[in-house]
Length: 304
Length: 144
Image 1 (spheres, helix red, strand yellow):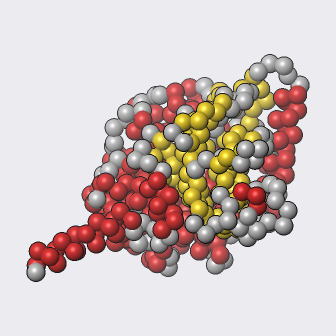
Image 2 (cartoon, one colour):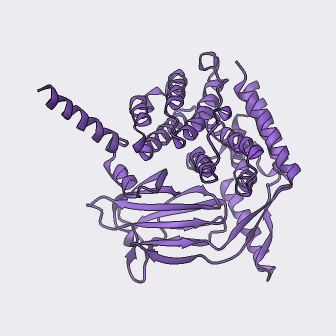
Image 3 (cartoon, rainbow over the protein chains, first blue to last red):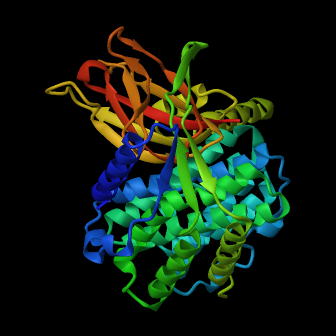
């Protein structure tokens, strides 16, 4: 299915490029029709395709980095502090919370908020142990690196690596539904962070980043699709993802064309892309995304 | 004796903190070599035997890259690798955006900075030069 989507995208791009002399490609990115992603196909997603989807989700560290670049101050108000890890009765709740808190950990790490990061780490530890994947988290090392602020890179590596290993273990051991939940949790919290910040800091770069999530939302939906009929919790989650999808439907992403420019510098190569992506999103559409993201994310964290 | 012991403990702690982030020293060193202005995002561990027919890079993966971000791709391989690890990056239209290897000159770059202006899903393909066998890692970082 990924191959088909990719093929459709390439054909669409080739057609649009070949039919225009203008440097602007206005066909842009569109969602495939729902019917083109039948459940049976989604169920056949290979382990490789699922791993690719996991890679496609923007790292919460990237969102946090963007906020820092835009000089947005840290705020604890964005954190999912209402999650009570002792009151997550099902594996569904635990896996989703693990993803959400993972995104918060990335945010805290980037802003070097050590004390809060360690509190969240303790929650993550409980959730991971509850899912019997605690062995993949080197909590002591992460805690030590959190305290040692000079090792941000090591901390980011250990945190990301732990989540990657948990994700792989779950998928390899027939618990792909929990892996999907974790990934959805990470994405939802990252998008929540961005949509909350933009209410106070309406920077165009951040606005674009929120709208650009349309590019990967379909992958997220595909990731969840095989499990949508699994139980009531999944049915509800899949419904939420469709609600988000609807809000993205009329947001357009178009592209301008160009060839990359390369220069050698300091023994390496610097490549600047001259192609650009442009998000066409009205204030109302943005407000719709802020509203739906906040509503769904809060339903996910205020369930205790 | 106590001072000596304390010093040893401090040194071990410092070394563990600095280098103990990965059980794989190749990955750790590659992350460190990305530079102080680079923030780690992902790594891709690549281990390949000799190719029957060298051509398209064999290890393929993908990741999203976002506009207004400068990424650094660092490429490291073990000393016993017979070829140098290289990377090709293609966009979602399969257009080659960058390559760390020029097959005409044989030149390889150990790092490439990519100033991304088009958000999307990109395909990363890794291999060792001339399809030789090797073991390496590609680290993706952000440059602030």
